[in-house]
Image (cartoon, rainbow, N blue to C red; front, side, top):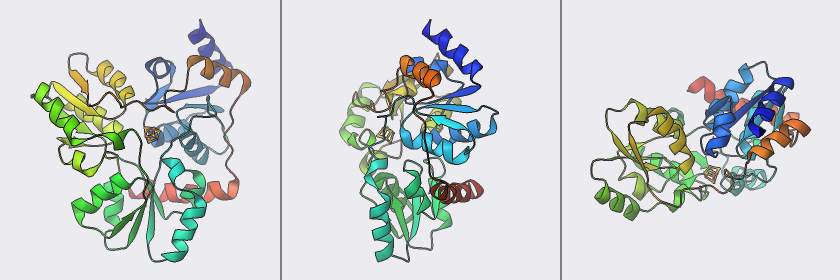
Length: 298
Ligand code: SF4
């Protein structure tokens, strides 16, 4: 069986398999660890594995490489890319910085290594609020997700300029989706990822990262939830909470790039050691500084 072949190869090659929460359930089930991108990269760095197979999109595998420079990091599907991460380039950011030298650049982890390398600090959706508040008296540029930036700007009235990037999955959510679902499921709590637009977030009972949503629903005494993030999260939610009820906020919550990875790709990646992620050392060390600053502050 393919699953057994993967596990055998993984052992032979001393590899660790990571799967983001948005991967298909069969990929999540063969992974050693399932989680958010930074959390997974941190876990992998602490293992003695020589190879990391990152089932996700390429900026995630890059982050793993930044934290584990001596390990070989593989992305099973070369074409798996995050459209949001591609919305900011090192070239455009350099141009902005030259024109706005007084703004601190706070960079969401959903970005490429060369963009992280140009930033003052990185954030995740779990710690963005805490880290941005540490810069509350300064002028800030938040990249690349306009929605998370606008949410924090609105909440704390900060001097934040936002890059016009967005997640094409969460950005599609509309207030009418929540109104419709609340009418159908009046006892359910609405849990939403902060990459959704502000007018949607204002209707949520809880706003948090993917991991935050899993933890919140699992620890809550509530029984029924409307989930406003990528559909892959339903697998860990149902696994951890077999007696609770979860409704996906909208049918459009499926990330094309996250769903590219198949078990066959994981097997081929391990067998042929493809596709290796390379980050030039000068970029890696600068990107590492931005990530390290975040880890120290969070
Ligand atoms: S869900 Fe959104 S942020 Fe995540 S990989 Fe897909 S497009 Fe990028």
